[in-house]
Amino acid sequence: MDTQKKLFLKYLQGDCEEHELQEINKWLAESEQNREEFFAMELAFHSGRRKKFTDSTFLEIKRRELDRKIKLYEAGRKRKAAWVTFSRYAAAIALLLVMGIGGYFYINSNRNTFILLEAGNEVRSITLSDGTRVWLNKNSQLKYPETFTSKNRKVILSGEAYFDVVSDKGNPFMVDTDNLSVIVYGTTFNLDCSSESSCSSVSLIEGEVKVKSRCVPGDIVLTPGQKAKLNKTSGKLYVLKKNTRLDAVWHNKLIPFEHAGMPEILASLEELYQVKFDVSDSIMNYPCTYTGVLKRHTDIEVTLNSLQNSIPFKYKVEGERICLFE
Image 1 (cartoon, rainbow, N blue to C red):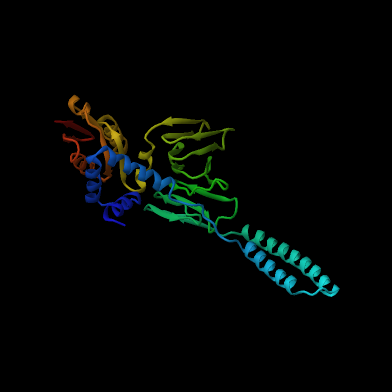
Image 2: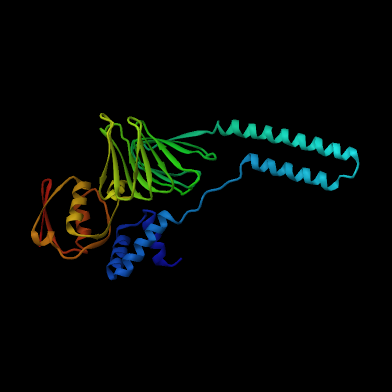
């Protein structure tokens, strides 16, 4: 793998340093073709890079062993009635064994060990048995089976998590919370059901999900760029249109923009940092758009300094307000 591809992979995995982000942004600024290629790679990484996870079950292994033994018996048997009788007994015994093994597998599959992952005071990540990746926000909990069984990929969330779900159309992924459920077929989304908030929300970044409220009947199907919010008091479930990627910045500290003008950039920074911008008309109407990635730092001034590498402006911090000018 060449150096550039390694760099792109680091970005997609959320491992880029500040100087590496600047290198990516510089390459993106060189041509429209570069920008289209980069965002196509990002889409492919999340939606097309994975294959369905498969594994042999205990029952299937034992069934094959029995089939092999019966074929050996039948291949070597003679044309005598005794051997015919034996083969019939063997078939009956095999059936009983398969039924017994099936019962054993069913009972033990329903005793599948569940694991509780607690994030504590730091963001934690995990790869589940089907290949699905989950980032768990601070003070959140995820309960999940040690191994997913056939037709059952379900986890239970308390708090907030970012999911990158492996596609398996015959076996949907489900996330349960206290007040809603999310059904997924291969998707990237953020789910926030924090107990201290008056609402629970699902922000879809890629793919498609179905959101069901436990309070009222019916469900909502989301498309990328939509956010479903559930009012915990009224039980009302409604949909918003927004930049859903902003809701997931916490998991990798990266703020992505594609052909974004200054109004969109500043609105995003206001939401993330809880500040207000006073902007001159010349800056607000800056004719060029920005495609690139900003690192979210604790101090907004560090983020603004990075943005100045691509867009010419000056700024002055006055309390919770920031003035931008030429």
